Length: 245
Image: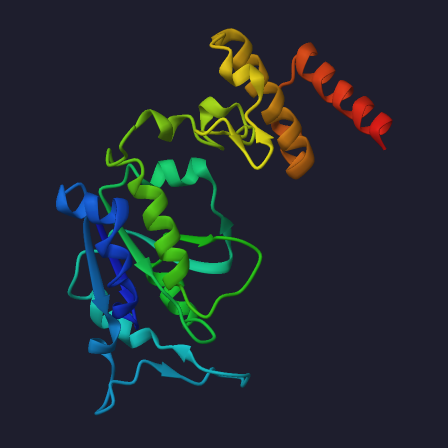
């Protein structure tokens, strides 16, 4: 898989690409990441890459010409532009993108980009949430990390398909997890997890996922198919919570 990242700030990636699963993916040649310094395509003695927008307004935007110079001489992958007005990223979309052979990330900065860049070159606009950042570098790194998790670089690849928001998670947030020691500062690992009874542990984890999702992301319940036992779990939780209050 090849990923081209078109940025004004290539040094941003020096550290992230040198650690963790991204480093592993590069070393094992699971992915080829090409960081493109768009200032090389700037205009004039100062390699200018931005200009004031027509119609006025605060700040500057990236110009069309620097991207035209790049795309006129380089192969274009499935091209993504990161913007708050894009479609919010999901695990399903990340999985879909991980199967592409070639991706190109267009990173805006300052107040954005000339819209004609989006019209001519961009295949898909993606948002990572309802907030605004100074540029596309952080969103691109987020997507890069999420995609690479599907490239066989995890110590235990089974953990990828069982994570929150994966199909195997049944749409629930992941249950709480614990490790040794059994007792820390009067906080004890739940007895059921020490029992060795796998069926009961599985049922317990389902209950904890249901309660956690109900408390933190109740909106996800509109997409779930709950059985009678699930509904009873939430009912009992609410009854106990009411009684304790």
